[in-house]
Length: 305
Image (cartoon, rainbow, N blue to C red; front, side, top):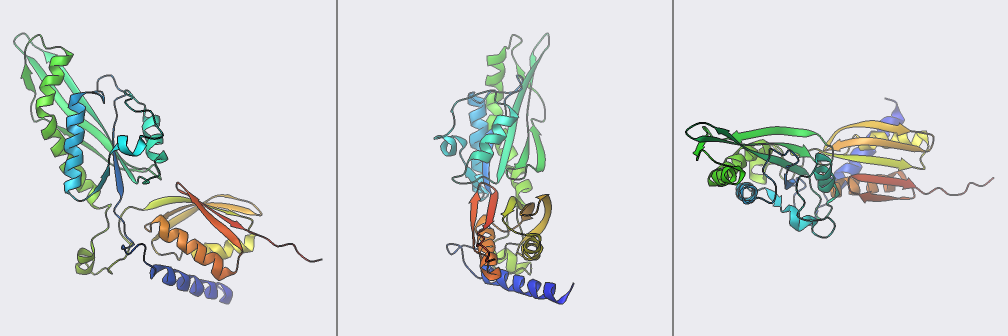
């Protein structure tokens, strides 16, 4: 690394240090992920969303995660204004698009689950099997964070002539227990995504208020109007930002560059760091943010000939 680059690296570290000292509404920088619980019922063998069994599992699951201290949001409440309600047999594409489109508040993790209930008819009874499967999805990056499955230890018995309604009634008896068990499983899987509280961080040797733990968020950083030398300098800054995980170029041209950028910092801190970087480098421009995309535009002045 030459002398000029070393200077830029030092300045970048200074810029980030300034940003790191700036509070966000008095809260610590590490934020708990916002969680959205969504039902998957496209498979005809699953219990539909409008079933009382589904609602009992959803309520038990939500309550368990809420008791564990997670930020759990109701899908209907946060999607009421912009999306049709009461739809059943939704596809994966529809579910994921809804999760990504919700902006107030933005969702970080989608818990997507499905309830399976089946009956095996015997000459003397009907054996009812119940299980819940699903996955955890990073809403912004699409990365799978884990899968899960819970089921009853043994089938339930039901009358010989037990049809679909009878099967659901039998499943409903255990719906709340299954939902609570599922909540315990998810709480353990989600625990590593949540930054430690200040007391835990201090005990583990971390710094109070640090955001070097928790769910890594993915963003698209689009730089417009910058020449290659500007982009080289900018890269030295963005890799020095607090919480930086890694980045990857998506596209590059003479005046434009786009990066896939992953960080443990929240969007407010990243937005602040980008604005401080522009100011520190003496660039006139604007930083705009929407969803999971930042657009950084340089305003160029007319050259004198």
